[in-house]
Length: 171
Image (cartoon, rainbow, N blue to C red):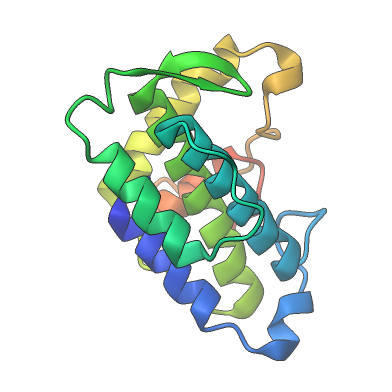
């Protein structure tokens, strides 16, 4: 995941107040608390993927982010083969999966709480291209994107990514 995306999602999480944790999100099965728990679990699993250490049972979002950013910034990280629950893949693919998770669920958190996350279009565009390339190549049981939804062509990149993942975006 890129450091700026992780920092923005961290900012959203840190800004949550008590009543917002139970708000519904565009991720239909999860409220805000469940989305944050999911992101923490994803970060913890990728810590194992990228560092070879044990999966922390508890760790803060910002701590996970620091470990992951450092791991992905290592010179060999993009080309190194890593093992995930999806199988063996280049580190670059793992980075794109983690970035996708943070962008989409950061968007979910923003929509649920009325905050507008600040994600750069270039990162969102890269992840859109990644999703469009990877999703049809995955076995059906591993495809986690729902049917794409309509979105304006000139919408921000993260909105188009959300629509690609099956979220309803105002058109």
